Every structure is written in C-alpha cells, then in structure tokens.
Image 1 (cartoon, rainbow, N blue to C red):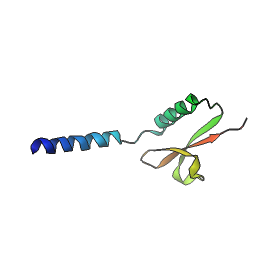
Image 2 (cartoon, rainbow, N blue to C red):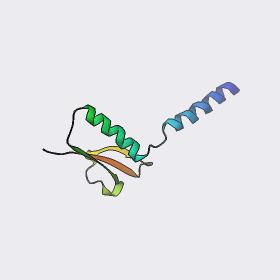
Image 3 (cartoon, one colour):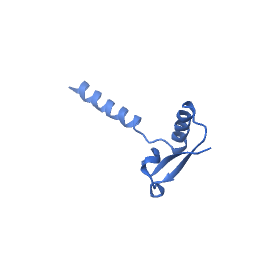
Image 4 (tube, rainbow, N blue to C red):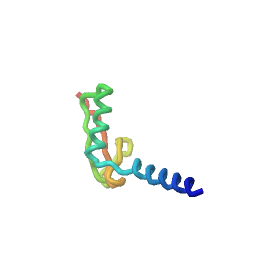
Length: 77
C-alpha cells in the first residue's frame, strides 16, 4: 500500500512539473518555429496582456500563468 501511495505522489509531482507555465519568449520562439516550418514568411507574433486581446481567434498561445497571450496575424504582401 505504501508503494502505491508513493507512486501516486510521484506521478502527481511529475504531472505538475510538466504543466509548469512557460516564459512568454520561450513559447513565442516555439510557435514561431512551427509557423516558419509551414512556409509562412510574412506574419506577426505579439505578446500582449489579456486585456489587449480583441479577437480570440488570433490567440495562438497563453503564457505566464494565463496572464498574457500570444497573438498571430498574417501580413498581406
């Protein structure tokens, strides 16, 4: 029974480590790499506070414990 309790506790601690919030700049860099891998060349990624988000469809990421969002806008050529 003690082994089971230790295993559950270990999994809970591991799960919370994976769910740790990412810094905004790190998440922005990961999103940027994915966008560039798709061949998109003209776009803007911006880190904004939740209050500055006007269109939820533009949000591509959330960071700093949900206090900030990363918004994406494709630029026309």
